[in-house]
Length: 345
Image (tube, rainbow, N blue to C red; front, side, top):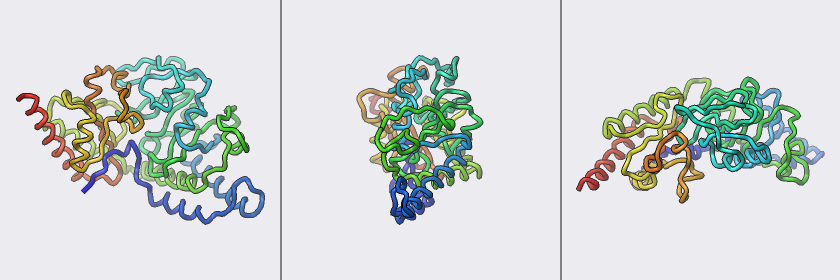
């Protein structure tokens, strides 16, 4: 029996998104066509855009649909010369100068209008204040912690649907209405001339439906139970291995995320061991795991390279049960004991 504990990498498709996508498959027209079929497709596209704006608290914003947060980051950041800390996802880090300091897990922002700050970190779950920054990455935070585009005063936000139960391959850049955005993909002038190419109507329909469901789950307090299970997991791990270091414990974190360090046991080896035991977890961002170059997130938080190489991330979902986290903790502890015994021999 497999247990999926890697929801920060991707989440299961919500039934609301699946239903919306199936319905969209029957919409024939191209949203750019002017005939009845095209107008029907355009209507579906704009309803999805309006629904997403509503759940984002982005009434005075333009929503530009993209292939995901990576493309949205390029669209928002290319040529801007903005500054960030070493905590950003690789999709953002590729475009910024990583010179902002981090103190006790908090990004030190001197000039918000020249800074990029993520809402929540995918590897540690640490939550940041993003009010007034030039660009924020809400990919991990949306649907798990409160966020409103209009109230935050950010210059732009990027996101991806598959992190909250939507389909893979679709995301968005959100900017105030009328913002000058230099197109990176040019052609037919779709998406208000900022991102050419026929819109992926099926994926966009699933994106909007998942966003509405995710926002409702947050409002209903469903992530509070997940946070309790996360804490149960960490207590069980701590009881079994008291020398375990829990990154960000006691700070503001995503309710589902636990990143912990077990010195002497490489993160990738932990991932493989737990995979063989039937548990899907990771050693960090899915976009950095498996690469020769380790993520820079933990060193940016002050951990040495050896500790950073021994980190494991467990990220729970809304369907995760207490039994699953306890079974994981027991399995992890048994394997940890074997590693310790081998090292002592």
